[in-house]
Length: 217
Image (spheres, helix red, strand yellow):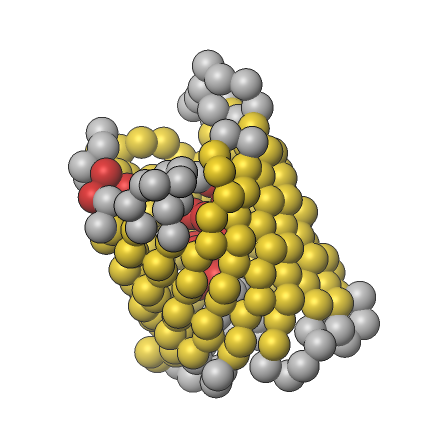
C-alpha cells in the first residue's frame, strides 16, 4: 500500500483525539473504519476492502497506541505501534512528534520504523495548512507532505495533500490526493478521495470512520 494512504488513515484516526487534552486526565480513545478502494493496483485489478481499528491512551499530551488493518489483499495486513507527544497552542498552531513501528504479518513481519513530525496552522475559520514529515533512521529514507483543508460548511471539509517519499534502492516518488469529508456527527465521518502517484495509477477510495472517547471524556 502506498505511503500516503497509510499516513492518511493513521492520522485521520489519531486526530479524533481532542487537541485540548493537555490536562492530567487519562484519556482512552478508540475507533473503527471501513475503506473500499476501486482498482488501487491499476486498471483491471481487484477492488480492495480494508477494516481498520485502533486504541490509544493519552495523558498530558503524551500518547501511545496500536493501529491495525485487515485487508481483502492480505499481503497488506498491518499492525502499527506508536508513541508520541502532541499539543495545540492558543494560537491554533499544533504539532505532533512521535515514533511508529510497522509490522506486516503476511509480508515479512517487522518491517521498519519512522520518526514523525506533523505541524498544522489555521488561516482564519475556513482554512488550515499542514506539513507531515517522516524519517526511517535504519534505512535512511523519508517522506515529506504538505496539505490544505477548507471548511465551506460546518459538516463538510475539502482537503488535498501532496508529497514525496523515498524507498530503499529506488528513485524518489511523488503522490497526491484530493477529496471531501462529511462529518455526520463528532464521531462518524465519510470521506471520498482520489489518489494518484508517479509509480501507480489513480484510483478512488471511500472511507467510513467511527472514533470515540472510551475513557476520560
